[in-house]
Length: 157
Image 1 (cartoon, rainbow, N blue to C red):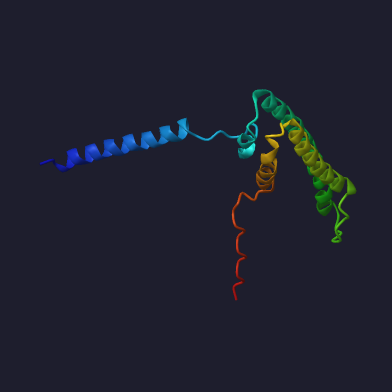
Image 2: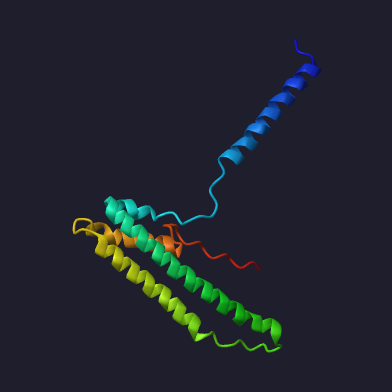
C-alpha cells in the first residue's frame, strides 16, 4: 500500500504535467490574429481555375483597399461629428454630414461592381453557381450566417 506522502507526490507531479501540457497547447495552437480576411467559404463552389483565382484575389485586394479607405474616412467624419458633444453645450444633434452618406453609397456601389467583376471572370458553366455565391457572400458581409434572429428580450416588470 502507498503512503500518503508518495501519493501526494505523484498527484502533484501529475497535475504539474497536466498544467504544462495545457499551457503548451495554448501557446502552440493559438488562433491566428489579424492578417487578411479569409476568402469567402463559397469561393470553392465556383470551381475557378488558377488564372481565375489569381484575378479574383487581385479584384478582392482592390476592393478591400477601397472599403478600407472609405471606412477610414467615415471614421474621421464620425470622430468630428461626435467631438461636437464634448466641445459645446448644445444638446440638439448636428445633421449627419452628407459626405458620410456618399461614402456609404460608394461602399455599396463598389461592392456591387466587385460582384459584377467576379461574374465577368466566370465561364458560362460556372455562372450557374454565381447566385448562391452572392447569397453566401452577402450573408457573410452582413453578418447573417444562417443563424435565426434572436428573440427580443421580455421587459421585466
